[in-house]
Length: 282
Ligand SMILES: [Zn+2]
Image 1 (cartoon, rainbow, N blue to C red):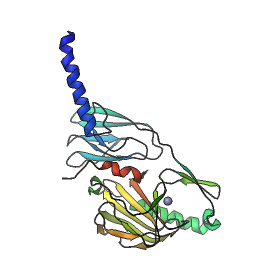
Image 2 (image 1 turned 60 degrees about the horizontal axis):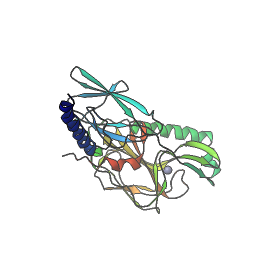
Image 3 (image 1 turned 45 degrees about the horizontal axis):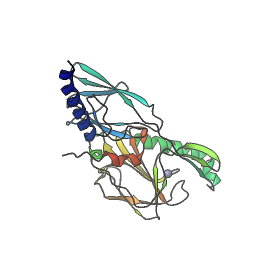
Image 4 (image 1 turned 180 degrees about the horizontal axis):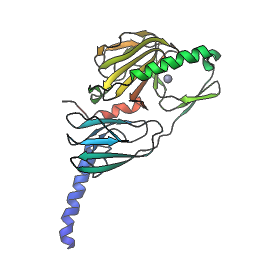
């Protein structure tokens, strides 16, 4: 009996070693292959058998013809997540455990008081602008730009990280959801992926010159504090194309690019994107 079991055990362990080398984040014995890091703030690409369905929070996710789908987990996402893969009548629940992030606390002093406590007119303006930004992110195109390895949008020093919580003049603010790249005004900003421009505003109250680009399957990126915009709403842009220039417009203490990545309304960490590189679209 023992002798007959032994070969089976060694075949299984070879199989699990093979799986682990294909996808670092793969969970054992699941019908999903994951690309990315299973952690808070991450954008992940999953691959299932084509023609199967993936259900998350009661909603069926869009799947490419090759069986790829995207999912994003926000800054404070629950560590235990459940998805369901449906293949014909077969339903397989998938339990994911995300690793917990530690976020940085920043204190920024010397912000002009007029922007720390905006007057009612400014609050009204900022609210209307936030609605515009929200609408620009409600895209659901079938572009697959996010499948390409991402490139850095600008050269410069990383001066702010995702998830950090800021205190302006001692007052706590909502967490920071972008990656800040400090560089002189006029430094070019390049598209990290191809996409379609869904918002191009030269002067929003908080974020100044602002761009939003749709990359498909609810993935979009945002660029803040630009001194110059080089593209317009509706423009189709190629990866690496210049889209604008770094500035200090809106509420900024100095020239920098603040760039963000969203999956729908989930705000994700741009610093985790380079880890999607194992994929190629063809
Ligand atoms: Zn920022």
